[in-house]
Image 1: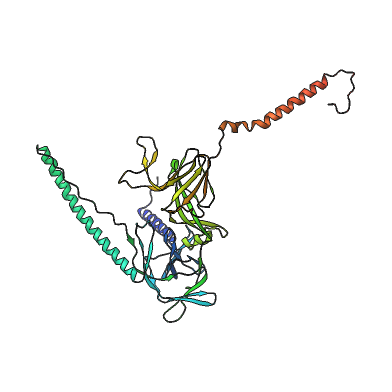
Image 2: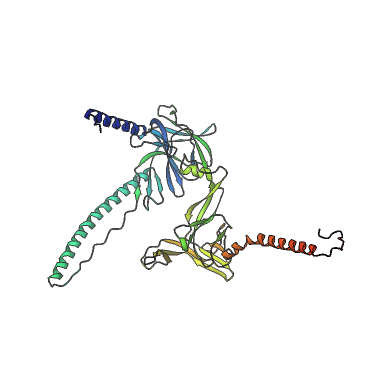
Length: 440
């Protein structure tokens, strides 16, 4: 085999590195310096953050609830994998001063100054969020900082106490091995978890508008309209409200279902236990709510509607009417327990004292046809809470194998009948004359 000179090998390695570096550099999207709006829109699951990077994307907001938009300068790039524009906040995030003008048609309806705001999550980052504005934002943030510091100190004291506890436990074990009396020390109590999460205090424009279509633009302190700052703002509301149910089947509690429309029917197997969780719900335009959650979303139908769960209903009873009469079911806690052993499985039980519950619900056993209705504490029914539970009538699987045999049986019967008629015709006497209407 012919060997290549060392210089050629080094040149090939360098060339490969350069080609690889060029290919890697080609994957970096091109970023542009732009004026954008950072949106913190109220949704019933909490405040959702969005980006309005281009004037062509409208901002959708819920009526009757405050939302916040912040004027920023940043670097914007297009990300082809998800088909959306993104902001490089780590490289540039510059607030833009000015006054936000809100126009309805040709009429100026609001002039907004930026206000300090903070968004906090009392149950952690995955829970519901709360918006605080103005002086309350600073107070809430300082309370969060103090609570976080106290929790940090409590964790340090707990770690020291646990270290001393483990040392004392080792000494007690050594003493017991030497024949002494075993005295087990008490473990230190663990501090309760600190669930509160908070953003920092930012500046933004608080929008709380009635339903309608608006235009916003930013006017700088010099009195000129900031280029690229004009956006369309669509403020929408619901068309109806009622009671929706989340259905947790006992046989597959990890895959809940929804029964949103009033008067709808829930189908279940006979004897199956259903756990129903009621929610106050509102019916919103599908496209508008999808754009509320993500201003660049391509989901949602222009002619569609979606039920949105706004809050759980906890102070209520469920009335069940069936062939056995009328009963009332209370809302109870339940816990999911893994079945011991090698086989997979679980059971839904009532939690013992001191045990946390995995979910709460009304337990209903599917038997025949049932009518469900949610009652408030005074016994009056909640509007739109009527539901029906039906058990479909099922037939054995063998019946379905008989269906294809029906046309075959009919065809065989017709063939047999024709053969019988043909045989009778052939057995006729030779001198008998055929009359009209006889088989020929």
